[in-house]
Amino acid sequence: MTAAIINGKELASSIKEDIRKTIAERKEKNLQIPGLATVLVGNDPASRTYVANKIKTTAALGIRSFSYELDENCTQDELESLIAELNGNPEVHGILVQLPLPEQLSEERVLLAISPKKDVDGMHPYNAGLLARKFSEPLFYPCTPSGIIRMINSVCPDISGMNAVVIGRSPIVGMPTAMMLSRCNATPTICHSCTKNLDQICRNAYIVLAAAGCLCLVNGSWIKPGAIVIDVGINHIPDPDAPRGYRLVGDVEFDEAVKNAGAISPVPGGVGPMTIAMLMYNTLQAVQYA
Ligand code: NAP
Image (cartoon, rainbow, N blue to C red; front, side, top):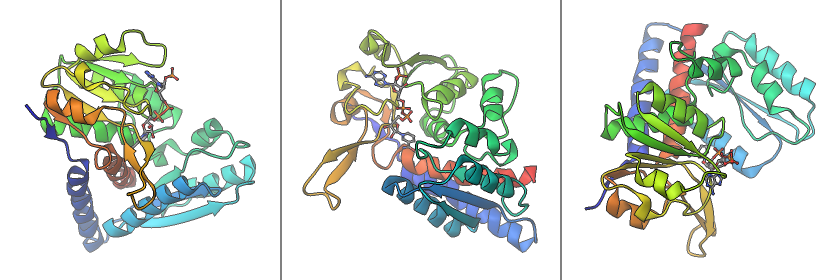
């Protein structure tokens, strides 16, 4: 048996196309056009590339883009006063501060400074708190977890009652994804660096989500026959034949896992494109809170 490939790139394209059409219709009807402000602090090359991709995508979908760059040495007050200005700007519906920030800046304080109504990353403690409450709805669901749930639902619309394992408990990926799986009535087990018998827990799971950032952490033989495997991990391995001298691989031993899984997402071309698509989706949703 060979698993179906969950093509995040194709899924993301269809979500983005729907957003593009909705925004074109809004333009025709003279309704407000969503605007996304991106804030890049410093010169980290990976962050610069992520922000550039987001700006490129906003332009392709007709979303207005407001791009800000601050110096590597900027102070907390400078960054927070920019956020306050963006909170008050009616043309800006979503604010994205690219993480990680330089050492002198507090990410917690920055996340708190963004208005929950413009928190299109879904990271503000207000939205994170609502996500954790069974009968509440956050204003925004965080982007990567939302993309993951859509990928799972693309091959299995009803995951109620299924055992799931989430490897990683970060506030960006692991923990909110576990909460979203629970909201879908799956039964997630959250694993981390101190978890014992990870292999046994995986063997018992119908959904395996790997978000540890550890190359080949999940052995292909751990995958239950027919399971859904979502690989969030991004690891760089040297490859002299690749244009940049490296290639990207995930946390799952793909070549072996693909023989057991029912469906599996690749790296690259899996979760990555979905994260950007969901950021655009949240930016469109943000117009309703203006
Ligand atoms: P993170 O904050 O470093 O968290 C990693 C988590 O994995 C931690 O909870 C850690 O446990 C756990 N972990 C580490 N080694 C482990 C092991 N050997 N066994 C079990 N658990 C282990 O990372 P993150 O921000 O969540 O990102 C995780 C990965 O996803 C990274 O490769 C990142 O690049 C990728 N990512 C991809 C996207 C995308 O859009 N494609 C988005 C975000 C992240 P402790 O809590 O005990 O330390």
